[in-house]
Image (cartoon, rainbow, N blue to C red; front, top):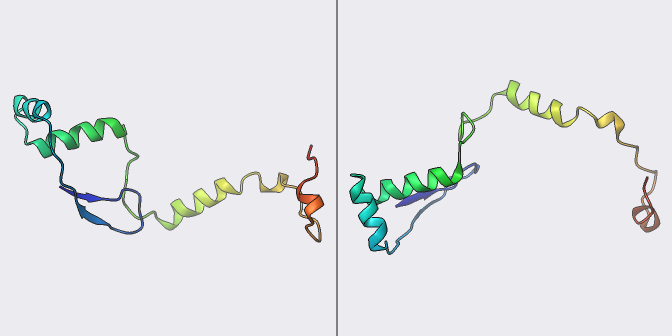
Length: 94
């Protein structure tokens, strides 16, 4: 069964060969599904609901909104010192 990496910038295809237990094959048959479709159904349930637009490119507006949300409280970040020393890194911060 071909597998594609989800939420990946790169498409990766591979073929996975599994030994299907008789119990899984019987459950798939009882539901009237091929084993592959039954296993995909099980995996989809395990993953839970996926966000809409999964696998689609984001628009410039969506990317800008995301970046703005990241920077929302950046004015509260204290400035870095002129030089960063080992002592500064390991000092106690309030």
